[in-house]
Length: 203
Image 1 (tube, helix red, strand yellow):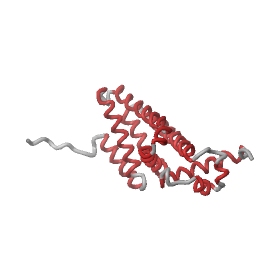
Image 2 (tube, one colour; image 1 turned 30 degrees about the vertical axis):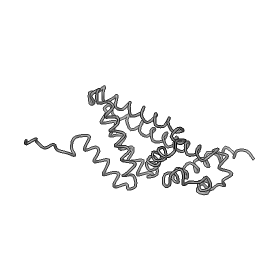
Image 3 (cartoon, one colour; image 1 turned 90 degrees about the vertical axis):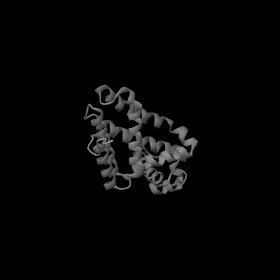
Image 4 (tube, one colour; image 1 turned 180 degrees about the horizontal axis):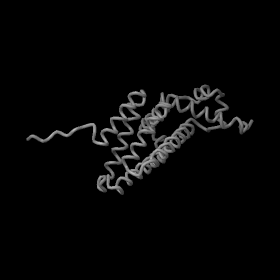
């Protein structure tokens, strides 16, 4: 029967990816079936295989599609500043905007981390995604080293801090727009030294 006409293909593919992203985000890889994805996308299970060969291939493609969206938005956000703090603030605001638009974006990022820990097969297929993430944020930290905002010897520590902050956003604050906004504002206040006031050592 072949592939569907090109006029229908892009729209159907988008429906498949959007449906799969929501299902994978909310329930994880193991609990989702191709039949459920097909039903949510408004097609038959047989038609689904015109677009992907397996559930694992679909999962990998959906996450790759999500990464393209996220890092595209992040790249746009960091162009507005030449400093590390300015770029990081831009990333935080972009993350918040995406969460307001669709909470399943951040939810899937957190779900994928769990699935990677549980499945060696998923971990192997997504190793390039982890490398992409690390390269992107290493570039942001390098800006901070170049501007003098970050000491060269603290480069790795700051990169790990960024990762922890973003993991926290997707793990614990993505389910509520208001909560996510408060956390973003708290992180920004912490970065700019406004959140905590050191107490003089009286000893």
